[in-house]
Length: 491
Ligand SMILES: [Zn+2]
Image 1 (cartoon, protein in one colour):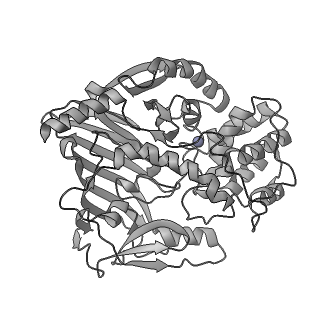
Image 2 (image 1 turned 30 degrees about the horizontal axis):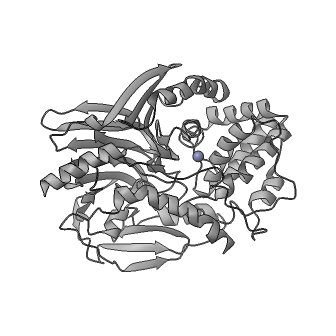
Image 3 (image 1 turned 90 degrees about the horizontal axis):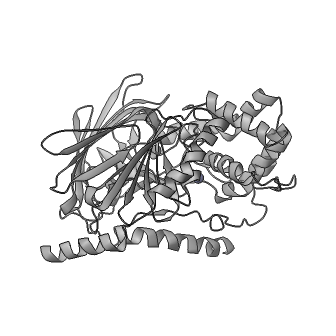
């Protein structure tokens, strides 16, 4: 009860932030809510239990995800065609995919698996699976596929989008474990890496802007078209894009210490110059601490007026308040990647430690501390423990003290950042790296601090104290009013 009461105001903030965007968005006409029969799956446990559970749930290893979005801003939807190229994971034969719109609405118009047409409404072709250990549902295709061969899944679907304002953007929340399976078919886990090519075709007389992860190229003559290409394999949940009307926004670009920085904000919204003022010392500081900026095309920022932020590969959607935190995640979180959501406590702990340990009085976690921050969650569950930000940072301070102090800890973090990019690792593997780097074995202490079987004390939800919440993507009042007038005229 205590925990529920503490979390409640946090959820309220999320609702407020999302309210404007989503509350009044009816689905496109042909879509109607549909309740699917779900089949509950129990995952096996063996000697290598965690890896087995992950293979059993995720089934496929994706190489490429290519999606074309035909976006109709005035009608508030996108017609989408996704192509997913994958091989089966070891020992797996029946493929699954995560794709929440297919389960939530009647959004899918066609499915081709290796060019064979499957009927989404037939249980002989597609089943919806739910899991006891995760809130992430999956679509299972009722065909057995060969090992060591590349397979192709193509799904055509209509994605309903917010009606009140023509913004089409990612809205990932790693705290909640919500990734881009809200927008295209993928596997929602940090360690599933794929190359993404997203093509946006905007069908409107309104001129749009587009920013996103990786290489963003404007092309096409008949419609406004952009291709967002991540150029390398990465977690789907770290892929960002944002499309907004040019007239409502400002876009400025600067190069800071060799890093191209693009900042997009609403007219009358957040201060772009204040953001550049923060980043001018921050980017060189990060490079001095952790090494060269890990994204060759720099960083694209959709700067919003309030709320928190979310990090993506070479991008962030954030308020000024969370900007430095999200940019730190370009290293820990978006290029140095934890293997599961439950291990993702670590990139938050490292990030918060870097900030909090600037105060020499910042205290390490006590040796008598006990928790189930990691062990309390399944490796396939989504989201991570919110104690990452506070107790997690104190665990990192204990590591820093064992190493000899803040600069020794930064040298270790730089070592991991330089050697383990795009090679997802677990909490235990982080301890292997610690031992490789320093000879120090902290496995016993980590087992007590993070891997207790039972909850020892009821944790305080520290996300509120740190102000962690979703960024507020709604435009300023003047822009809202403009669209309200346009809507009335249309009626
Ligand atoms: Zn964070």
